[in-house]
Length: 587
Ligand code: HEM
Image 1 (cartoon, rainbow, N blue to C red):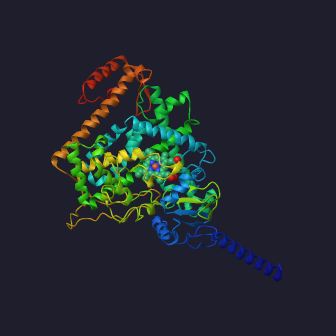
Image 2 (tube, protein in one colour):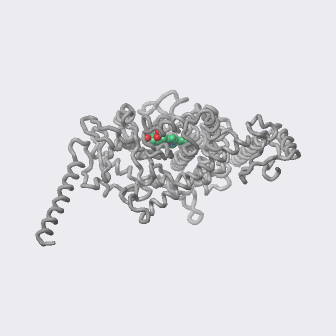
C-alpha cells in the first residue's frame, strides 16, 4: 500500500474515532436529559463508581446533582440510570406511571434473566411479560393464603429451634439465623425443613450472580459475549443454573410422588399440584418447579438481613434492648411473645422498623426499566432508562427522618416526630415501607417478613441479653461494626462476634423445654400423618402406601407393621409426650 493511501486511511480512522467520541459525549450530556455527573464517551461514568457500597456514591451524587428535582441521570457503558432520591418522584414514576415503568433491566450474567425467551425462572427479575403476570398472581395468592392459614406455627417452631441452637452454640449464630429463615421457607414450600442447608447456598449463588458486585460481567457486560471456550463466567453460570434447576425439580417431583403415596402434608407445592390437575395456572413442571423454588429462595436473605441488623442495633443500644425486654415481660407475662401479643408491643415493632430504616438491606433499591419515552418535569427520559429508587436516600431524608444517621426508635413512638402515627396498637408497621419497592413490582413478602421478624426478634429479646463479646485474652469488649457489609443487591453485615447471654437460668431452661416440646410435637404430627396414610388412605388421599423419604421408594406395608403403626397412632393422639416412632427404622 502506498504511503499516501495509508496516510489517508489513518486520517479517516482518526477522524471517525473523533467524530464518534464527540457524538457519544454529546449524546451522554444531552441538555434535554436530567442533570447528573459529567459523562465520558462510551463508558459514561463507571470509572469512579465503586462496586463496593455503590449506594453511598449514588447518594453523594444525589446531594450534588438532584437539587429540587429529586433525581439525576448517569450512564454506565451505554445504560442510562435515573437515580431517584425523593419519594414523591418515585411515587410519580413507579406508581402513577406504573403502566409504562414496570419492566426490569437485563441482568447480563444470567441466561435470559427477563424470561424474554421463555426461561420462566426468576420472577423478581422477569420483564413485564406473561410469565411474570401469572407467576406473580400465583405467588401472591400463596403468600396471602399462607398467612390466612396461620403459617405462624412454622415460625414459632423455627424460632424455638433457633433459641435452643443459640443457647447450645452461640458462636454459630450467623449460620443458625439464616438457617432459621431458610427452614421456614423450605417448610412452606416443600414441607421439609431439612432442605434448608442446600437452599441457603443456592439462594446466595443466585444473589451473587445477579448483583453488580457479583461477576465482573455484570459491569463490563461485553465480556459476557466472549466465545464459550474463552468465557469462564458463562461456563460457571451454566453449572450454577443447571444445578439449581435440577434441585428445584427434584424437590417438586418428590412432593408429587409423596402425594401419590398419600404421604405429603400441606405445602405450597402440594397446593399447586392439587389445583394443577384440575386447572393448571402455569405451563408445566419446569415452570412450576422454578416458581416454587424461587419463592423458597427469595424469603431467605431478605429476612436474614434485617434480623442480623437487629442484633447489631440491640448490641449498640442496650437502653432500647432493655425497653423491649421490659415491654415483653409486662405484656406477655413471662411467655414467649406470639403474634397475638403484637398490638401490645409497639416498642419491639419500633425497634424492628428503625433497624430497617437505619440499615436498609436493599440500599440501592431494585431497578425498573422504562417501556416508553417520557418527559418528566421538563426532562426527556428515553425508553430503556433504568429507574433506581435509591432507598438509602429515601430513608436518610432529614425532613422525614430528623437525625437520620442515628438509631432513634422514638421517631415511631412519640408525637412530634414526622413519622409518628397512631394508634400504637397498629403502628409502627413495616408494611408499605419504601424498602419493599413500588407499584406493580412491589414486594409480595411484606406480611411474611413482618410476621417472621416479630416472632424471631420477640423471641430473642425474651430469651437473651444481646451483648458485645469479651475477648478472653485481653478482657476487652469486641466491637460490633455498624458499617461493614457485603455489597450485593441485598446486603447483610460482615461476620462479627457477639454474646447471647440467657436472661436467667430459668429462661434458658424454659427455652430449651419449649424447643423439646415443639420438636416432639412436630415429629409426632409428621409420623401421625404418615401413619394415617397407611391406616386410613382415604383421609390423606393416598392409596395406603408409605413413602420412604430417605430412599425415595414407596413402601407397601405388611399387615403386622400396619398394626404397629395403628397402635402407635393411638398413643400419639393421647398427647405430645408420646414415645417417638422412627418410621424409617421401625417399619
Ligand atoms: C426485609 C425483607 C424484604 C425486602 C426489603 C424486600 C424488598 C423487595 C424489593 C425492593 C423488591 C422489588 C420491588 C420493586 O421492583 O419495586 C421485592 C420484590 C419481591 N419480593 Fe421482596 N423483600 C423482602 C422480603 C420478601 C419475602 C420474605 C418474600 C417472599 C417470601 C419476597 C418476595 C418478593 C417477590 C416475589 C418479589 C418480586 C415482585 C415482582 O417482581 O413482581 N420478598 N422485594
